[in-house]
Image 1: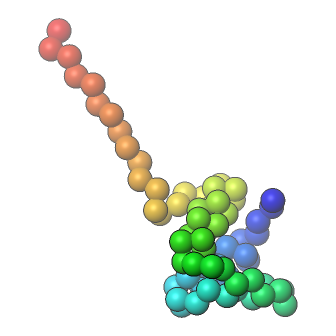
Image 2 (image 1 turned 135 degrees about the horizontal axis):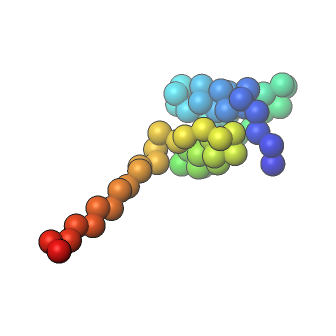
Amino acid sequence: MAFTDTQLAALDKAIASGVLSVDIDGVRTTYQSLDAMLKLRNLMLEELGQQSETRQRRTLAIHSRD
């Protein structure tokens, strides 16, 4: 599914407002929970090639005394 920056912005605005419904181009979508909205947001960010703030980058360092 192809997402747009407009859809992402509308979802971000709804999340920030604490509401579970989003209106985009006259189409209203109501989500079951904030968790569902955040999961969709992460999917949108991934597909749009943006980094999710909720993702953590981990680095593993390996050391040797030899």
